[in-house]
Length: 510
Image (cartoon, rainbow, N blue to C red; front, side, top):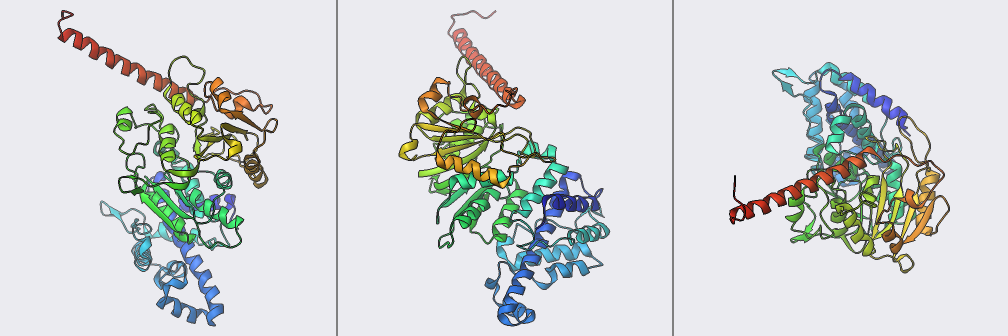
């Protein structure tokens, strides 16, 4: 099995092979389609090998599959099989682009997904990547097999994660491309504990890893699956949207992936209202700006009845969208910035995020808050939390919230920390066992949350012996931005009042 260190070295070498031809942030746009193509070819080769045992030999298997594509996940025409790609010595860019388009033609669900890059493209009459560099990159990508038994399920997501961190961190941060570490995805899947036939939705699905893990968690639990999960996702970034489609296809999963800004234009509707789901799992961009009061006021889907978040952070805008996307028995697991469950608590005066938290607590919609270890995520060292919502809590959990401080449940890694398998199981188990454990979990009443001014930060309730740390700078900046927004709003209102007074003649203009 291809391990992370080997994967990263491999991708680094592939990127170096085209260094100078394109800007570093665009490396992923050329490397990922080839990695996917290699994956498709290796999986197809494995399937032909399996079928050759059934039909007698590989040649017969290929002939039969050529006539009946349904026997394999995806049919790869001869010109696009990786061994043929490696043979090319002239017009490599042209033949590579033709091969990718041939795959898309034979597999309509890949159209607009895999065939979006032209390896033969030119700028001002010059090739962007010449055949020599392409040939070197193809040889480097040929070093490792990517069949189903050779690489982990989310190989594309892991590749994207590395390329984003290594070459496009600045671009990634501005675009909010926070790839969810695989162990966080497993914790979320085990906590939600999906059942056969359920519909699962990720409104910020990225490369689709959280949806894939939900299905894999069900497979781990059930020996026989008669009704697989039905998966739905929406993603704004075209590259990650294509990767999510690829991920669904390579896993042979039923996934309906849409493209677009979920908050502004949710794609999964039933008539004029939001479609609702059994489970929602997501890691939206943290502290996303660009959504002001006028945006929330003009919403036509009744999503933001709990209040309007500040323009500096859409965290609770996302939470309210996901809550509105749950059916009457629905549950959600949402990764957010740690400050989202604490900002405004303990401060004098009103705070929009705290007011929304109050609504969620008072209506008994919050089941748990889980504090993660620090330095897990690629674009930030902040720990993050997982917020668990439940529209229909079990009787013994009503009017109670579990706070889990899992900040020490990790092992040191380079460059990032990680949560080992035994600790993933430990964290998920403690949620399902629903017990207070010293220095790990505490179950509080909603009234206790109210007494603490709706601060739901697990570290406030569950000490683990670790010294108190300073607040994250991003958390402070969001609060300052909200205060400035409120000041400007107050100034505008005061100016309107003064204008009306002047117009009515109560004050004489100088």
